[in-house]
Image 1 (spheres, rainbow, N blue to C red):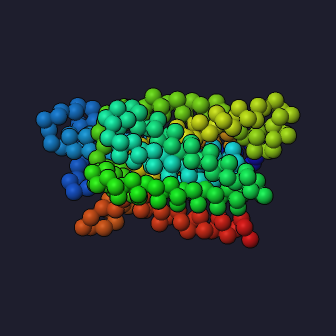
Image 2 (cartoon, one colour):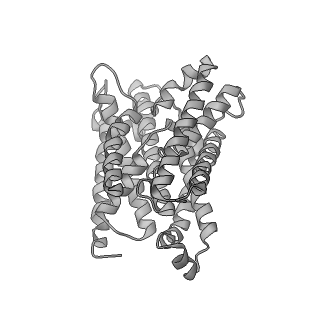
Image 3 (tube, rainbow, N blue to C red):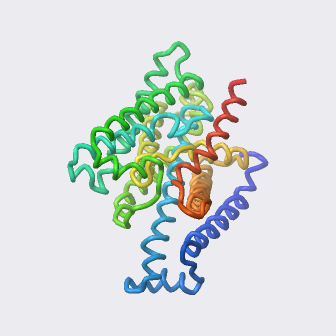
Length: 334
């Protein structure tokens, strides 16, 4: 804690107000505009026979809930990842988690097994794939001369992510049916979902959040160095493994819902560190709020930036995140 930490309530209130404004905008603005009275009626007195209620609840509300959950998951995953490896460039999209999760989901889709494609197993499959590729990234970096240095880990992550993306493309080329159903999803598009998919990930989301909040203090101490952490009684290996499991779950949930959306886990934790310095659990909460705000804003831009058509949400986050990554890398490596 330092002198800036009292600003935490103000930052939290500001983010909540922004989130509320974005929620209202997402629900009311679109091809059809709805008044506040219509929105309240749909939310609190939902009638499936009314066309306006179905548009608001089954399309727009679903869309914003998915965007908020995915944004929060990616931001918390990025925060935990940067804390564990001590790398400000740590991001699920760059370090192979998103690519591994996408490859696992596409591979199971190509197999055509209905059980593997169920909404309940899909996030777990994505989490396993993301965790496996991230483990490969860490192992490849560890074998190098520099070990788990920032440059080495980042380059290994980018390389293995590209390799996994190539394998995903090959699988799609040999399975045209899978290609058609996953093309938009692979661009990071929040569309075509149902409430059943949200209900399916809810237990995993709660589990990941609980694990992340429990392990955050230990990971914060670990960021001071292994020897310091061990001296303070932190079980280093166990804390890292638990933290990586939480990261894999967050990424699996995000990818299973919206595809591989990048750079949210890079932008948000770095912004939070610039704004405030707080206790680990408070930092996780602020990251989740800001991640939800960022992805909702990006989703609104994706829907309304062009008049004739909408963009994939992942396209907007890439346009925002690529310059941020270049700027951070230039500042870190100079």
